[in-house]
Length: 227
Image 1 (spheres, rainbow, N blue to C red):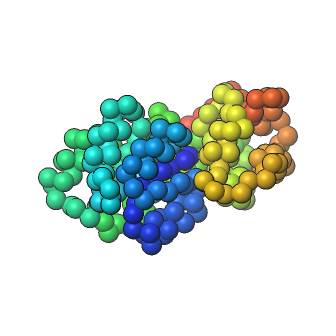
Image 2 (tube, rainbow, N blue to C red):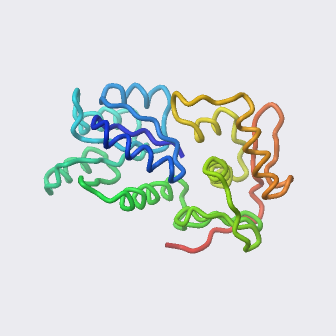
């Protein structure tokens, strides 16, 4: 899941980015509204976390411009303005949610999970394929009831494949989900992650579609533990 964080407070942005990365997101960061619009146009993220108080154009204006061309992209507004009028203005401009500063990181993560479930058209925290269960709330994975230890990017990769079970995910798409802008990515990094997952999940679970990418079969998908 790739997020675009639009926040001009550098210390806050750094803290948020580190926490989001730790929670299994790929995070790109810009500090200005115009940069956000350019970034979204060139590489559409899955979710935008947008601060209202930006140095060039305010977040509400960014949101209004965005909604002219993209009505579906989930946007979570961050702001120090917590009046009812400000909240209504943000929601009326097309925001999917609104979070007033200061806030607990746990609340931001919970709201992002809600937006993720909307994207995936599911209402649960668990995605099951065969004997594999991935819990997005606990950030845990089990195989036939036995917990598995996965590295952060292994978890991110598996989550992307499970969310798109039955559909081939290209190398470019998977790398976009795993890495942020500017990160050095070795030519075989994705293959290494796939190799490690196969050792833990079984060689046949992740299929290689030669010349295209990878996929998990859609058969026997079960979704459990409704929230």
